[in-house]
Length: 320
Image (cartoon, rainbow, N blue to C red; front, side):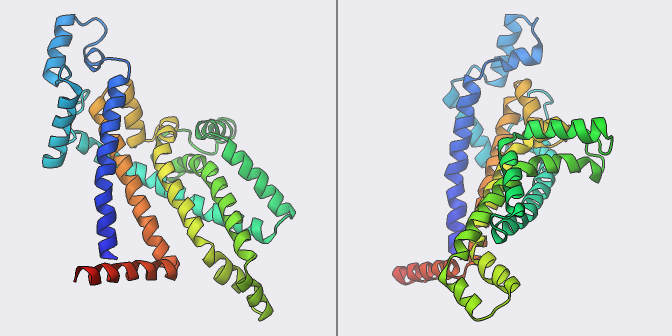
């Protein structure tokens, strides 16, 4: 298992390098001038050229990228912000816990609600419960997060006045953002859970368990849900990565001081080092989530765990 984890960690390195190269190319193609954004619209061309030279923006793209990777790999330095002059890594680490908190709470809400409604929908197939869950799921999948967030603000903050519309000053401030992020993801989770459960419910060992007289609860939770967990966990992992990336929009709508809002503000001010650092952090988070999902497979499914152990022993025997 340790060998497998080490191998997966090593595969993250080329992924992050590819992401860093891609974001460099995209920012180079993006319209606008970082020096113009710093000095203003009325700055002279001489002042702009001096600032571009000082910031290294006049260097070829390959030189800028090489300098960035050298500082990142040798010093762990993501550069300094064009706007504040502060280290990018320091600024992101200050904002990152807020993004992680919102994303984790949204993932928990997605898993609990999505799996529960999907389970009920599968057990009560073609009933009114199944129909209601299906309709809600279709609405959730079809509604983008920015639309859901604005509707929730309009109803619960503007009309009813029950919840605050923006900020992060207490638990009540996170209710609307979490619902916004979890609504669409919960719908996808519900549909996958229902599909996986229905597939398992048709297997021969389920009929055998019923023929032996086992109770309905034991059959559902011990046999059906347990054997349907692999695709369910896959979707939870995918949704966790999506929620980390989608937190940018939600943080902007609800004025939550996380990495997402920081990146959007940095895009508007052409603060390219901050944008690059934020994208790399999100890519790293997504890679870690995928690793945790793969490890969760071996926990819930003994067949996968035995296969990993067998491969590890086979490699050790071959090396010996």
